[in-house]
Every structure is written in C-alpha cells, then in structure tokens.
Image (tube, rainbow, N blue to C red; front, side, top):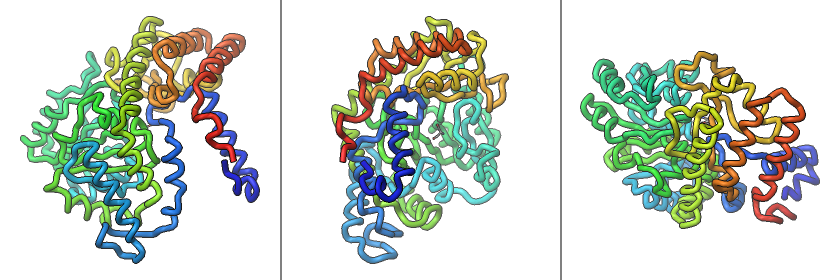
Length: 418
Ligand code: DSN
C-alpha cells in the first residue's frame, strides 16, 4: 500500500499505516461508519479523479466526457434499479450536500421547513441553528414522545398544520426506530408541502430490503453513501420523475460545482454490490446484532432509548450507570471500542457531555461478528461502565476486546501488500 507515498512522504504514509492498524485493532462502533470494500478504495483512487466535468451526460461544459458520461449513466441506472426510484442524481459529494441540493431545488430564502430536532435524533443540515441553512430558511422542529421516545406523529401533524411549511423533512442520525413515512407523506400532502427523507444512516438497510424504503412515499430522498451503504465518502439523491428537472438544476448549477467522478465510479460499483446476496446477509446481520446488543445491555442495567432498535444503531442511556456519555466514550476508546457520546431525548446534560452513547453495528457486522461476539462486547462495555477509572479493569477489558477483534480481520490478508 502507498508504495510511492512511502518514498516521497514517509511521514504521511506512516500516518495512513497507523490508522489502518488502529481500525484493525479496534472495535469500531460509530453508527455512521462502515468499512469501504477494496473495490471502492480502488475506484475512489482511479484516474477519474483527473477529469473535471460540469453538467450532465450529453450536456457538459467541458470536452472529453465520452467515458465519464457512461459512468454517470451507469451509476444513475444502477441506483434507480437498486432503490426502485424514478430518478437519481448521483453528483452529491456527501449527505450534507445532497440535502443542500434539494433545498436549492425547491426552496427560496425565507421558506419554512419542518424537521426533526437535532437533540432528539435529527441532523445538523436539517436546520440546526449552528448550520448555515438556518440563516436562509425558517426551520421549526418536531420531536419524540417523552414516554415512548418514538416520533410524536400527532404533535408533528399539529405543528405542520399550524406552521404550514413548504418542506417536511424526515430522517435522522440517531433514531433507532422505523419511521412511518406514509404518515408523514400524508401530512405533507395535506399541508401542501414537499416531503424529503434523509436516509443517510439506513440506506444500506433499505437497499438490502431489510427495513422499509422511503422511496415510494417521498418527493425527494437524500443520502450519504458511507454509513450502512458501505461505499465511498459521497452522496446521492432520488426523486419522483416529476421533480427530476428541478433536482438536476438545483444540484448543478444550483448547489454544486464539478462532479467527483472517482467517487461516482465507486458508487456505481456499490449500486451493483448492494443488490448481492452477500450484502443482504451483512445487512440482515447488522439488524440482528443491534437487537442483540440492545437486549444484552438491558440485561446489564443500561436503559436503551425507545427500549430497543429496528435498525443498525442504538442509543444507551447511561444514567443508571452513573457515567456520562463523554466519560464512557473516553473509557471505551481507551480499551479499543469506538463509540460516540450522544444526547438522549430530553437530555439533562449539555451536548459536549451527554447522558448517552450511540452505538452502531455496521462495521463489526461487515467483519463477521455475530451474536456470540456481540454478547461478549456487551459484557466488556458493562465491565468498563462499572469501573471506568480502575486501570486494572481497563487493562483486562482491553486485552479481551483486542483478542476478540483479532479473530475478524478488517480486510483480507495481504490486501495492502505492495
Ligand atoms: N451526522 C454524523 C453522524 O451521524 O455521525 C455524520 O454523518
């Protein structure tokens, strides 16, 4: 790996090697992460990175697009077939820019948007005051029911009727349950709003058909292509045929510049791979593993937000263990288990501390971990939570975590040998 970089920049090559080893020896459970297949790495590093192109196949602003056009057409065709979508625009660079493309397509400054609260599972680009879109459009928010911690659809409907948004957004970065897209689509129709679903976290599960798809219900569906989709660090947008022209114009020249053909090629490969039996089995195991971890942590006395999970992630409320999200994240990191601190609904702690952690099962499932290993991980997590400051305890936990993950290589042996 990095044969040339090793000679021209050994410092940087060394850092890449260190990161490979960190990932290899750690149990990676950040819910937005996955492991890119080697083909995705190859294509992301291919000569397509040299080509600058704006516009769409047959309507480019630069010459030399003959081959690139074929890549984009192939990517869009495969994407539509995989997700059963009427139209796809694969030019987004990320999930965030996918969302910006839709905003640029249908909103004008001052328009009203209704989305899910960030501190109850939403996303920064859905109108958080910290994100620039909040300065352009007027956002209001819906959230979860305090008892069930499920989306409060009645309250959302009431708010939509009062607020009269032009766009309603569903989709989240830390919501462990299936979203009732049909219900939200009905509300959007009733108030005359567009309906957009950001499926970034669950796109792989949707592609593999292990959870319901938002595609039949939403006007626009956006996504990143990492997370459960396990592809390049990039994005994609789908829409109904009637919105195709709006979306394409909103994406380029509305929101983005020249396309990134190298990641587009990688995405095209993934649209084929995600239809495979191998991918489907991994996604099925992701959901089984998430459920297993939720059940096991519950047995150890953790409280799981919404009492479980339907997808690839769970949010554990740590208050019964008398440890904050920040401290638990750091203690787990010190023994080689990587998670992130996360707000629980109605969290009394501030976002930099939090009462919870979000745990994702995609990367470990790709490595082949199944229920027996997940049960072992739950035990290690509990042992860390019980004595997070005890060096001997942490040392024993680290040894156990490393021995476990060593049995499941990140990439096949020799994958990166020169
Ligand atoms: N929103 C961040 C996450 O879910 O981790 C990154 O996409």
